[in-house]
Amino acid sequence: MAAPKILAIGKTVQDVFLTSDEFDPHQEGKVMYTHLPLGLKMEVEHVTFGTGGNAGNVAVTLARQGVHASYMWTLGLDPASETILRELDHEGVDTSHVVQTNKYQAGYSTILIATNGERTILNHRGVSTGPRGTDLDFKAIAEADWVYPTSLANGGLDLLRKVIDYAEKNDTKVMLNPAGPELAEPEKLKTLLESVDILCVNKEEMQKLVHGETLEELVHHALNLVPVVIVSDGPNGVCASDGKTMVKAGMYEDVKVVDRTGAGDAFASGFLSQWVQGKSLKDSIVFASANSTSVVRYIGAKAGILHKNVKLHDMPLHEQPLK
Ligand SMILES: Nc1ncnc2c1ncn2[C@@H]1O[C@H](COP(=O)(O)OP(=O)(O)OP(=O)(O)O)[C@@H](O)[C@H]1O
Ligand SMILES: [Mg+2]
Image (cartoon, rainbow, N blue to C red; front, side, top):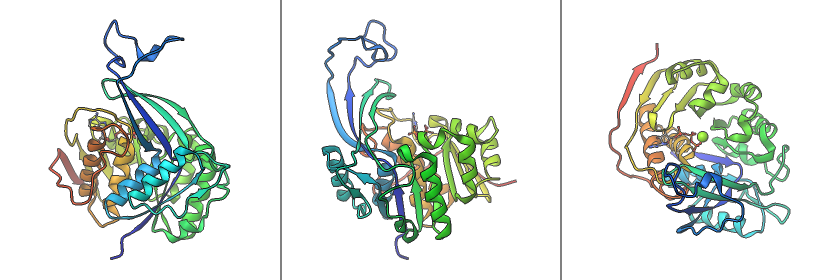
């Protein structure tokens, strides 16, 4: 079987991570990084450069897992855009659908990592295509087996609608793990779900779309909208269903969280990377969990992404036929 083709669409950024013992959310007497005083000059111990943006992170998990991964977006000639392209090329992501001209600019994020792995982000959003997806070659969607649109910047829901409509007309499947710009209007987002094949969101996000207190309730209700549903809840675990069985899983491993940037991307794309290769719901969830758990152990959204044939271990997990 030829490797499935997946097209990730959306904004990418260059990330600069600053780590310091001073970024301690709990310790009294330290400069609280949440209240940096005006005029402060503060030494930081470590700086790490990386690239991020949901769609780029997703493409790298897919590529490392042997899927034919393409990335489509608009980038500029700025150093951040060049770095992003170089890294994606190096990972084996097909970047032939990236439009690179001087009217665009990549995003740039400065990320302060707290000692507990949580983060504060100073974000420059860059300049990218707008609601109509000007300059993007929509034919690339028709050529793919799956499309994974996320973080469509100022294109927001209009562009998401256009991508999903185009996918539906061309029998391309859609995985949706919406980010901030798409979740800003949950009621409108809901109207798009009938053309979505897999929906993966965290608990709070799902509660904007359907009613429910527990992960199981949320999954049950969301199955009325989408055939495959996954709801994650950070270290508390995850619940998923494909309409046939329901998988409820706990934590893959209790690791020290160094930086949780990219956890959600690693989880959702980790799932898709296995699902499209014919793995079961359960095995896809185990890989998704392992991938995201690995990502939070390293600074940056991509450093911990698992490579092909990595050895996985069991995790607390319960599977039952759907009632
Ligand atoms: N503290 C943690 N320890 C271990 N694993 C974690 C932790 N936080 C997240 N993960 C892993 O990452 C997965 C996704 O995390 P989460 O449910 O927080 O998604 P998210 O809120 O969509 O993340 P993001 O903010 O990156 O979009 C979890 O299911 C889990 O496997
Ligand atoms: Mg998320």
